[in-house]
Structure formats: structure tokens, C-alpha cells
Amino acid sequence: MDFYGADAAVDVTIEVFIRVNLRDTAAQLREERQKALGPDQTLGRRAEGYREKYTEHVQDKYGVIKDRNSLLGQNIILDSRYTKLIIVEETRARKEREHEIMASGQRHAEIMSEQKRSITIGDLFAADEKGKTQRIIVLLGAAGIGKTLTAKKIMFDWATGKLYNEAFDYVFYINCREVNFDTEEGSVANLILRNCPDQHAPIEAMLVNPERLLFIIDGFDELRFSLDQPEENLCSDPWEKKPMEIVLSSLVWKKVLEKCSLLITTRPAALEELRQCLHNERCAEILGFSETERREYFDKYFGDKGKARKAFNFVKRNEMLFTMCFVPIVCWIVCTVIKQQMDEDGVCRQKILFGAEELQKHGLETDSLLLQFCDFRYEAPDEDVSRSPKQPPLEQETHSPIYLLCQALKDPHCKVKRLWLQWCVLTPTCCRDLVAVLSTCPSLTELDLSHNTRVGDGGVQLLCEGLRHPSCKLQTLRLWNCRLTPTCCGALTAVLSTSPSLMELDLSYNGDLGDGGVRLLCEGLRHPSCKLQTLRLQWCGLTDTCCEDLAAALSTSPSLTELDLTHNSGLGAGGVQLLCEGLRQPSCKLQTLG
Image 1 (cartoon, rainbow, N blue to C red):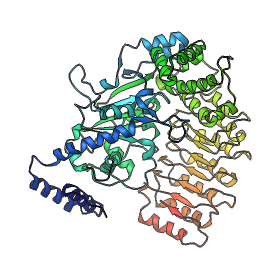
Image 2: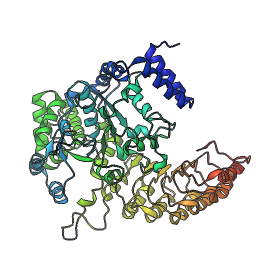
Image 3: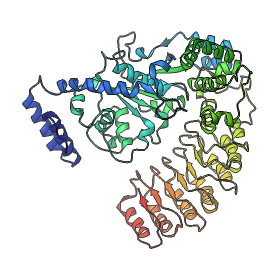
Image 4: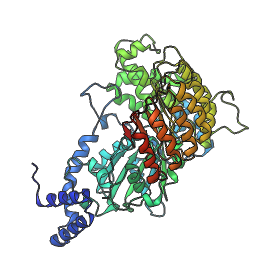
């Protein structure tokens, strides 16, 4: 049994009323409390009283970090590792990016240090030359460049009184990767409560002054749903419970807590989609480490000036390695390997190539390291960086941007199990290179190409050639938001009827797939050789027209146990009735219907 003080008890009662859908009663109770307390003792005072407890919680939570290869209980003080990054206002022009990309070694370090518009994280919400402060900040950065660590540093510095204390009473952190796994409905109030040290936080009091709230939305590019939701679905009440994609969309679109501030981190490839949801945003971009910061990072990592200097000078002599260290994740990998080899006198023996056994011996997993390197190296460039006809070719025209990655994946010793290439601006040419990977990499079981709108039907038809190969072991294929139509479904049907390994297929957010595409897929689902267990078709523009085929598939499919049809409003009651006919069949194996 829990005991609450008077104020907390009222909060709990209000929350209970909301959960049982007695919103009018909850609103009436709020009003009565405010009248009883009077203006001087109401919500503002309660929020201020809780703030100290909340800041202590944030300090404890964000003051320590873990290395990717750390053991249980091995923590690192954030300030002992965090190194200042070069941040510039706005996005850079094409020529400026090209100039940086083409440089290497010392010249690259000089270019990084010459950035004239460099700012600090403390300047992100500073007033502009007209004295106006923007309430929406977009923080761009490539993979591994330090966006998440910067977001956590902001949380910690605010809690310790070093940052934004005059601007914000509360700062909340939202991890987009975690939001993807929210299956239950929630509200903005729930998002706030997740940040709090207990379930008795005075949420209502915190919401009194929304202009004093900052929400850090970290990893927009990792969202597996679109924020482009119909306006009528969005909510304006922070207590209203809806699917999390609606709640987050309402926050970003400023339909709820209109006066709050947002700091959103994302990779450049997702910027255009994000901008469609924003108004009057300000952009800043993380470029990485300058030479000075690289040296500082080595000092902090090694904790010994002598060893740090020796390691730094060693890396600086290797032009390519020194250039790549402007990316924090690469800098960490290099420092980790060098430190562990230095402990065994490896550097003294001039050893710079390390085998899988050596990496594993030092707690580094080759799979995750390869994915980290690939995530950085093979991220597709922005539109404004693509080569114009008059520029000298940087690679052969026949090679796609992921050609070298695919060559590495085809190596007989490759053990990569999961390949995620979301938001990478992939094209059908890239899919052609992936075909060979599917047929030659037996360890690869999961492929995620979500949010690559250029892949289209042509790219998927090429992929299906690899999926039908007898040597293909892929079990999970995700193709969210790839602009697919019924044209590609014939090839996918052939895969469903022949692939011995494919168990999960996700085609969500392909609004043009429609009834025609699903009818074709049902032919594959009904095939006796089909092994598919999970099919996801959210936001695919389906109506009751396809439900008869789906019902037939449900009653005959030898393997399908989960079907997700959420957010297809055209299905209607008639469509559900047709589906129920299939569900009632004794031969139906379905366990989950969404």
C-alpha cells in the first residue's frame, strides 16, 4: 500500500480519473484544487519544490556513461571523457562540404579549425542579431559524430546549473529508438513522467509554464514511423492518450505545448523530412573534432599524458587514420585498439593491423565494430554534396555508394548478422550490389532498408533475386517508406513461395501498396512452401476490398502467426467482418492481429 501527501494524493486521483476516461471530472478536480489553494500556493510552487529532486536524478543518470566494450559496473564520468565538438550554425554550402571531404591529414584538420561560424552548445538557444530566440533547434550530424553524447551533456550541464538555467525550469530527454518499441498508448505527460525519478511527479505543475520546458528529441532519423500524420489525429491536450507516433507528432508539430522548446538531433539524410514538420526552426551542425580536440580526446581517454602523446603522434603519422579521427566514434575505436595493443607493446612493434582474435581478446566484437565503421563510412551524402557533371569522378560510375561495403560483406570470414541502412538515400543500383550479399553472406539474417524512398519497385525487384537464391539465409526484411506499389509485389510473392528462411516482412508506410499489392502478396502467403510468420502492413492504404483475399490467406497459410494492419482506416467494419471469417477457420494459425 502506498501513502501520499495531500498534493500527491490529488495528483494520483486526477491521473486515475484520466485513465478511466473521466476527463471532465479530472478537469473539475484541478480547478477546485486551484481555487482552494489560491494563486500563491498553486502549481508553480509545487513544480519549483520538485525541481531539486529532479535535477539530482538527472545528474545521477547522465553524469556517467559506458564505453561500448565496458563490462558490468564499468562506468566513466561524463565530463572526464566528453570533448568539445565543432558546431556551426546552419547547413553548409555544397562547395564547402566538398572542400572538406576532398582534404585529408593535416589539411583536413586545418579546415576543421578554420570554421568561422563555430558555436558552443550554450549558444544553441541564444538570441539572434534581432534579439529573437528560436524555440526549435535542429542539431545535425553524421553517424557517430557525437549527437547523442551532446544531448546527454546538455541534460547533465542543465542539471548542474551550467547551462540554460535562466531559460528552462525542466529539460526532458526522449530517445526515438526507444519510442519505436512503444506499443501502448501514452501522452506527453507520460513522456515527461519517464524522465522523473518516481511516479508522483507534479506533472500538472510542470505544465503550467510550457515556455519554460525543453524537450530533447534524440535520433529523429531512427524513428520507424512518419511524423506526417493527419492533422485531425493530432492531440492538443498533454494528458490525452494516443499511439506514441501521434503523441510525438503532436509535440513536433507544436499542436500540444505550443510554447515549449525543442532540440531535435538527426542525421542529414532525414533533414528534409523533418523540415516538413517544422516552422521557424534553427539549424546547427556538428562537424566533429578539430586537431586540438582530437589531441584532448586522446589525453582524456588514456589518462596518461605520455601514453596519450605517443598514441596521438603515432596516429598523426598515418594521414588517413588521422583524418578519420575527426569522427568521435572512430577516435574511440582507434584509441581503444591502440591502448590495448600498447599494453602489450604492440605499438612499439609498429603493429597497426589487428586480427579478429586480437579484437575479441580485448573485449571488442568484430560484428559491432564493422557495423560502426560501415555506418560512418557508407552513409550516403546529402543532395547538395553529389557530384556534378563537371567534377572529376571520385569512383567508377558502375559502382554504387555501398559497393565497397558489399564487397566486405561477401568476404567468407564476414560474420555480420544485422545490416541496417536506414535513411541512406539508396537507389536500385545499391540494391543490385546487395543481391550478391544476400546470396553469399550466410551470417546475414536481418536487413533494414527503411526510409530509402529511391529504392522503389525497381530496387525491391532486384533484391528479390537475391532473396530467392538457395544460399540466402535472411530472416527479416524491413522496407518501411520505400515508395513501393503493387508493381513489386509479384516479385515478393515469388520470394514468399520459395524462400526457406524469410520469416518477417515489414512493408509499412508504403501508402501506394494498396489493395492490389496485398492481393498479390496473399498468393504467396497461401503457398504451401511459405515460411513467413510476421507480416506488417501499417499505413498501406488498405480498404475492405483486400480483406477477402486476406481471409483466405489466414485460413490457408501454413506459417503466418502475426499480421499488423493498424492505421488502415479504409478497412472499416466490413473489412473486419471478412477477416473474422478467416480467423474462425480451424486451419488458421494466426496468434496476433493488429
